[in-house]
Every structure is written in structure tokens, then in C-alpha cells.
Figure 1 (tube, one colour):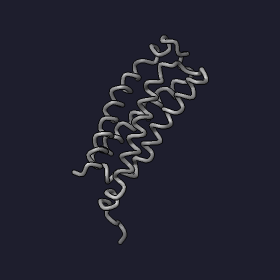
Figure 2: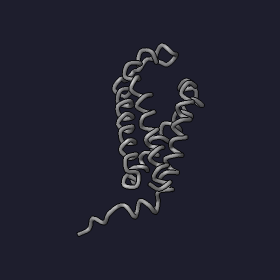
Figure 3: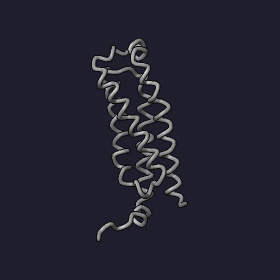
Length: 136
């Protein structure tokens, strides 16, 4: 296995398992989050929808980790997934619209987004050699 492939495999595997461990308990923490200073969840469908979509992405990260060169195109929306939360969370904290307790999680997501981008970039030439031409 090449170094770029191994790097991508490790990054996406770590991200997937980390995300599953962090997100799964949120299915049971809605009321606790409200008690910790956050306002109660006004739209539970958004809360549980966020957790469900985020968990689905963790599974996608594990799939990407299984064959990084093959799944390289999926790395671009994976980067977007990480940046969309990280950037939004930091802006919301700066505006006083959410608690500073989300900053460590935003920082982790931004770091993982950067690592995903590095994996995508490092796999550039290798991915082109792996994907077969499907034209007749």
C-alpha cells in the first residue's frame, strides 16, 4: 500500500469511528444539552435529523477508508461536511448564538476537513490509475 493511500485510510477510519463515538450518544442527550445552558430544542426534527445525517457521513468515512483511491471523489463532499459545521459553529459562537462549548468540536471538524483535503490531494495521481474506464 502506498503512503498516500495509507494516510487516507487512517484519516478516514479515525474520523469515522471518532464521529460514531461522539454522535451516537446525542440521540439520548437532547434534554441534557438543554440543561447545560442551551435553549431547549425547538424543532426536534432538525436536531435528530442533524445527528442522523452526521452519523450517515461517519459510515461514509469508513467506506472511503476501505478503498481511498476508489472513493476519492467522495472526499470532496466529506471535506464540505467537516467545514460546514466547523465554520458555522465558530461564527455562531462569535455572534453569541451558541455556547463556547462547541469550539473544541468545531476545531476537530476543521482539522479533519484539512486532513481530508490533504488525503484528497495526495491521492491525486494514484486515484486516476485505479479507477477503470467504464466506457464500452
